[in-house]
Amino acid sequence: MKNAIVWFRKTLRIHDNPMLIWAESSQDFDSIIPIYILEENWSHEKTGKLGNNRLSFLFDSLLDLDNNLKNNFDTRLQIFSGDPCEVIESILNTKDSKVKSLLTDYCSEPGSINDIFQVTENLEKNDINVKVFPAVNTILDIEKIIKNKNFKLPKSTNDMEKIFNDNHIIGPYGNLIDGDLPTPKKICSDSLFVKSIKKQKHISNFYIPIEEIRERNYQLKLEVGFENSYFLGGETEALKRLEKKISERPDFVNSFRKPKTYSTNEDNNPMEPTTTGLSPYISNGCLSVRLVWNECASIQNSGHTKPPESLHGQLMFREMFYLLSRSVENWDSDIGNINCKPVKWGDYDEEKIRAWELGKTGFPYIDAMMRQLEATGWMHHLGRHAVSCFLTRGQLWQNWKYGRDIFERKLIDSDWAVNNGNWLWLAGVAPFSMPYYRVYNPCPDKKSSLNVETEKATFIRYWIPELSLFPSKYIFEPNLAPLEIQKSSNCIIGEDYPFPIVDRKNTRKENLIKFKSNIKQ
Ligand SMILES: Cc1cc2nc3c(=O)[nH]c(=O)nc-3n(C[C@H](O)[C@H](O)[C@H](O)COP(=O)(O)OP(=O)(O)OC[C@H]3O[C@@H](n4cnc5c(N)ncnc54)[C@H](O)[C@@H]3O)c2cc1C
Figure 1 (cartoon, rainbow, N blue to C red):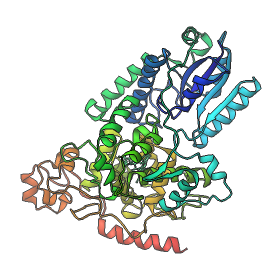
Figure 2 (tube, rainbow, N blue to C red):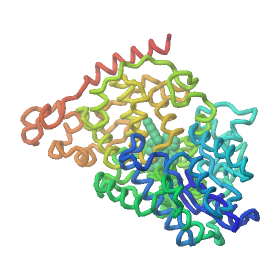
Figure 3 (cartoon, protein in one colour):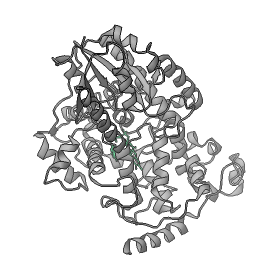
Figure 4 (cartoon, rainbow, N blue to C red):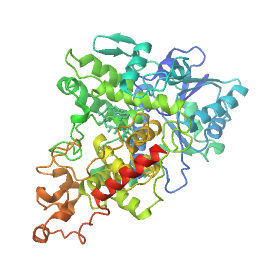
């Protein structure tokens, strides 16, 4: 049988998967070898790059993909770790491999682009055809758009609407996006060959048996606590969440206004987002972003909300960051990045950054958000606004890149283009940033634009059990509570819960002055 390697990168699904559709109809090969290559070295106990939740979400997703491949096409996902060129070479060197093509999804990160460049160079020498499928993890074909001679760096959803309209047919309730392809029915896989791969001696350096993934995933979940694994990775969960949060709720979709959603999650469940909570599934490719777009379009009525506040508006922001990350040089840096004003941030302050990361700043709203991130790997968008503003231009005057790195490691929806874009936005340094003088109060009241449930303060009590008996009146700024109240609430500030690490009002004032003088220079 002639084989094609299908290299799953950011498309951990079988629905709306152009690689599988192609494989079904191709005349060049008649069997697929589905593979995934972990970035990290498997033999290392822990990776610095992926935190426990992020890794566990990825493992859930791989296990689910393996299951879906097994149930639908009677084949199994082959998982490897190591340098992609070496891994692929080792498959080619397997006896009777007969590989004719390699199919993979386009990924925009510089490292991924480099991988494809090298793999293609190697394979073409061996007369093996490499096909990279664009617009699988995004709605737009990123490379095609940025190469258009009329392309200008977008700064808003207005700019994005124009790009969408120029590239997609406009329907009555939003642009119609091609695709969301059906799951193929007739994919073949030479199961004997696929089985023989793992038995090859020269592959054993790279090959990871699926049972090992399952075992390590279980250990990770033990470490983070099963109750904190609220978001289970994988396509199966993704499709269930899509149904529950979007398909079954036309009113929610039609009236969706992102800035009005509560940052402190659902009243009856401190884990459940008031937004869709689909980001981890979209980022890991367990859910097709085109399917999400089309699902919203199909239930929108004439009165639906519009970008930037609507759900389509949120997806446009995502596309905007993908376009920018591929067209702005040094996107992830504060040097040589035309989308980043030069600001002289303070020296790295380990104590402050540790307090921020661990949720021990003495500001309960900030701490609850950061503890939620640590425990579950997710945080509401407005919570992300508050903690990133606090770390940078708000209170701590630290470089946004320190926070960006911590988010990158911990977020289960971690995405290079989007994470950097949002940090640039919130640090106030980008052309698309909010005005730098709009600083969030880290001790929000019920009128705050952070949309916080302040009456029962369930979210704060859940994530900061030290304050669980505190009266709501003082819970957002507990250091202001009279000692009698602290005693009767079983929480003495400075002993059971920290004093604020900075004076929020003074630091805000000083930082505004510094920011203004930095951008003037
Ligand atoms: C400092 C900071 C860092 C961030 N890092 C990431 C990241 O690494 N990965 C990530 O996916 N999102 C990131 N975001 C954006 C945003 O917070 C999340 O996408 C959103 O909270 C996910 O929740 P949801 O799926 O319920 O979103 P919904 O409001 O339901 O939106 C639907 C989808 O739209 C997309 N989306 C929503 N908001 C944004 C946005 N501002 N930018 C780009 N796409 C968006 C997501 O794919 C999301 O799933 C970051 C925001 C900030 C302020």
